[in-house]
Image (cartoon, rainbow, N blue to C red):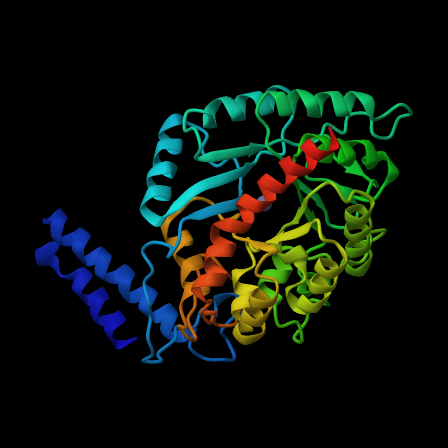
Length: 387
Ligand SMILES: [Zn+2]
């Protein structure tokens, strides 16, 4: 406060009145001091708000900067982030810098919207795999099915290599336009579409549920609170539970053994990886992407690394967090290093620190690229064997 008063006195210094540059400088000093005063006040634990709590690690432990992934990478979970040719060129430059060989663009689109997306990404052959969405128009009317299958075939011929991202957080498949409220993944109306995906060799990316913290009460016991609150599902009514949604995924995968499914975000089972393991065990056509769940797994590095080792042929790398260079590098740091107790407040809002998983070369090369290639090749092989 003393320095604050001194600054005000400084401002009133009459010699400076006629010198605009000096006045500006003094105004900047004043602002800095105000900010400093506010920060100093916030250090009282009684006044500090949880949302403002952004700790910084002071441990003197290794902090590794991974400029580029150790092996070539296929990012199995990106979206249509580049809306102009310039943005697309910048994305490809970043991919080259960090070692992303190819990105799967989950467009979720059909019709003209899909055609526009695929036309843009076609300028970089081999660098992008564009996936389409189902057209659920009329899903709640009798006769739904044949037209949606025809549109799927049209997208396939136009270059769609898979379908996704579909999503059901409890009230139905709502990630596409139009949304299919009340229709879940294992609904019989989905059968002709999911069968056709197997026939055409198109893998299906599906988001079911959300991390368990979103279902917990938003109170002092919720250890994922600051992230969970943003995406809360605890206040939903008439929605399937997390366990029921896992059931829809498992039943659909079993019903369509020829179709390959990629459940994104570890099927939202980070809190209980054994649940995902059980689904892998019972569904050989099921894979999972690791996108947007780096913070959730970096909190339990030993258990997560064990899971990666056990299911190293079923997990595929993905991001789902934009196309920034630092974003890619943080994901590599989590997977490759044994760095401890670090934060990335740009990407994550959980209040726990991150720990590198230190995955082996063998596991990394599978997760980074080989499994993604397997998904695409196996889907095509299944399709051919059916013809
Ligand atoms: Zn996504």
